[in-house]
Image 1 (tube, one colour):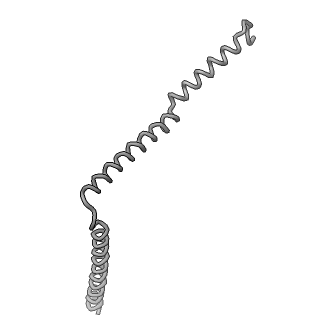
Image 2 (image 1 turned 45 degrees about the horizontal axis):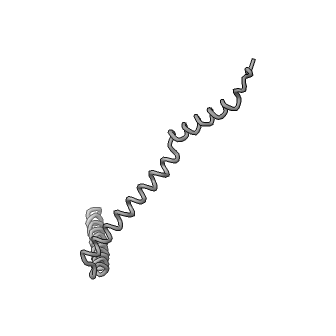
Image 3 (image 1 turned 180 degrees about the vertical axis):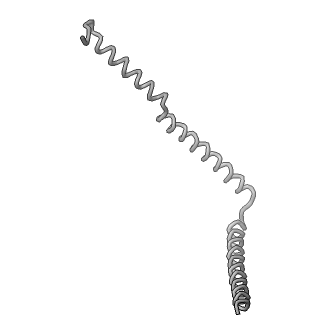
Amino acid sequence: MSNRYMHQLLLYSTFFIAILALFFGLYACGRVAKVNLATNDLDWDAVANMTGDLATIKKTIQTLNNRINGMHSPKLQEQELMLQLLQNKGQTSNGKMVGG
């Protein structure tokens, strides 16, 4: 009895996997057909233009990111701190000794 149950389980599970694989295959074919239709009238000049535009946009984004990262760099904060210290030193040094 146990052997028969195991055979039925294997039969139904393989049938289910086969049906699932069929649906995945049909889905993949549908996606490929959709991409094929979308790129049917695309020529190499259009691809070259898009590639150039993407390279320009990428370079612009990298430049912007570098500028943004430069604003938050520790070097800039240290320079600002040094300037503040120099300004404070210039204001408090009036010839009188401060402190005790």
